[in-house]
Length: 68
Image (tube, rainbow, N blue to C red; front, side, top):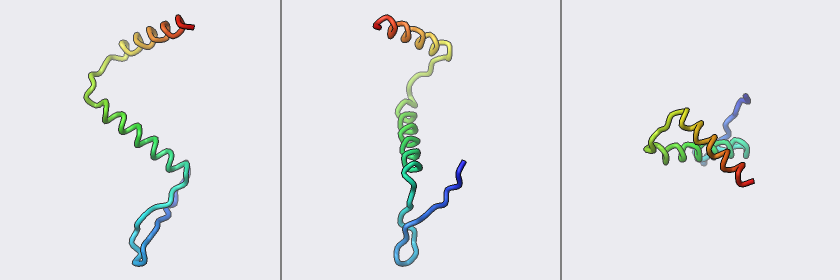
């Protein structure tokens, strides 16, 4: 894990107005934000058991291979 040293953009009075991020850090933050938005959108969906999810995945895999 790397240590992140923040770099800020300040105004003439020294008040922080922005932050400088590496592109890789910025992209990771965007991915995290996207993931959180997806979770929020699906919050009210009903849950299913792990066993049901496995059954659905097996069924889906069979359908995909059948089409090949």
